[in-house]
Length: 202
Image (cartoon, rainbow, N blue to C red; front, side, top):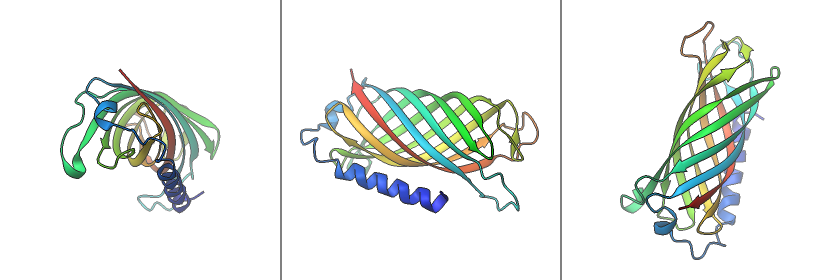
């Protein structure tokens, strides 16, 4: 599946979340996203390397990942209009399993921030940023080290099935690098599709 295929999959998944939006007729974002609310999330994704810098060769890395995030809503709903939303901050143990060009792994912990846009009822778009550090045995021309950083930014949407439970789907742009701690460190980028479920509680 190439980058275009991943984007189509992300659009399909977002469309499915919109179709699921109707069950939460009584959804109240002021209560769900109240200051001090905790969030636990489980998610999985699939990604493929893309050639951002136009190198004449790349390793065509493919992978799937799993994460389990524990978060807090430190402020509750803020802002107005389109920007009415709530900030989520948390930590996420995270693993990536590489399937191509050979079997390898990455495992570590990510610090994640996600901003939820609350003006559309039970359909809640989000934008996110994350930084992670962990161990790896991936050895390719772009990077060869026992430690690397993952950085990602993404967009997506949640659909609330109740005041406490949501499913979500989204797209991430991910960068992998060891910060020049070891050589080689050309680094690499990937398109990632993600799906998950979150539970909100106090």
